[in-house]
Image 1: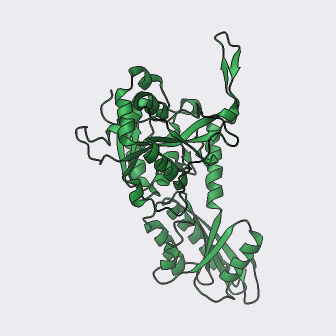
Image 2: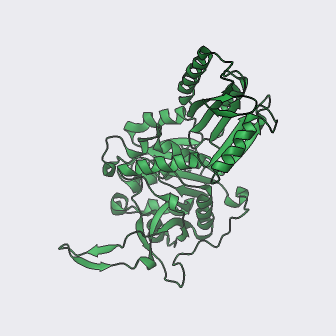
Length: 419
């Protein structure tokens, strides 16, 4: 066994079997989570994220968990998705020794919390075993508290939501083990030794095993302690270990499409597209007046008419920015409207609040500064000064994960059009 905890990315969707039924062969867990308050019902929950893979199938030198998507490491998106779930107490990330410093740098750079690092092993199962050891009370120098339930999730599945995490944890508490599944996309066939078709599986009776998975900690830890060297070396399915060594039949929970794993180079492009889509789903218009005839309110009305597929909200910046803080957790796109000097206090106040926010931001924040001038009374030099200021500010805040753009509009009392 490797000393200390560690972990490594899971293999993509393995096949698991289940009973045939009239409808879906694998119905959702009967545990309803609607309106549920996790709190005490869950007990203590921790997570182990394998991040020791080398990304061989992706065909790049950089391990895929450290590949950048929108200039941010992929693993950082996964960590913040887990951090957004307040009832997960500890998150153990297992990485190879050569990538330990890089991982520490990511944690510091993006302000990740509740993260503990452990060294990865030579295989997936040995890595997960080391991750579990970091949470076990029987290990020397253990600084973490043993949880009642542990979640195992891949570092390269960044789009996991709280709903599926809650459902697999609740199912694990009842059954000892639980895992997310998805319908098979392609038919699975079994070849013969000489390369001919032996038989195929009925897709209606099988599912792809995905992440996250959850276990009573004592169950999965015992399973790993009893595992043979062959299982630790060649196995990939955690649910199978719980069944084989602890006789726990895992509850299978239907998961959403977003559980897919970044495996190949083209998946990075797909991940970027998904992030951009999420960024653009809601816009908050920030203005410095409640006047319904102001350009800010007119812009809000125009956006609602033109972008009816999106959620458009608005708020007025007060002297302490209290209203803005209420939007940060749900919204990542802001339009700050100023009918005053471009170097406005409202703009700087918004950016400062975004920079200082302690809330985990899963995606880069997009801010569009809209500065309105009466071009007939503003000198060309002042317009150019405004453009230079916006460009300099954009470069500055980009280092803090804020993507800033600027727009100058020709504005008078009766009309506003692009300039």
